Image (tube, rainbow, N blue to C red):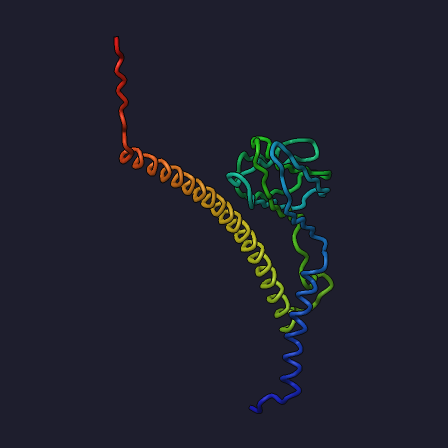
Length: 225
């Protein structure tokens, strides 16, 4: 069997690069399946609601996580167009909920920090509506996927996994940085307090030792008759 020539190797490499570029472009372009990914500030004693129009039979996933603030918890509530509660959790740090829309209309989901009196939160959520469309639609096809198309599908799935992992690690990094900064602030205040206490104790000891070695002179007064 003869070895492939330069032209064949170049064509194979170009095909792989083309598949990767195509998969990356399809990830960046918006498709029929919508997704809302937002990070926002939630003040103390506040409530923030979001709305999404969903058609009946659409599968949706709500995922959220508290990044910074207090005990890293928040209340979450999801309602259908008629106001029926589909999901409700109190003081959750993170969670994920998947449901299928039972009717057409505007669905509402809210995050509440009303139980906190002085601590604001930073909340991240990802609301996925519908399934991602296939890379190569199967309708009007009479043949199976070619080797290049199969490679494009594999690269596309791998890139989606990479994006999910990157989002997860960014959230973990932001949460860890917030905890570290909070701990650093507490350590700094504790160090200042210890320094002040040490200064007060040192001054007190100096005055105490000085009183031990000071001359105590008693004055006697004689009263003549």
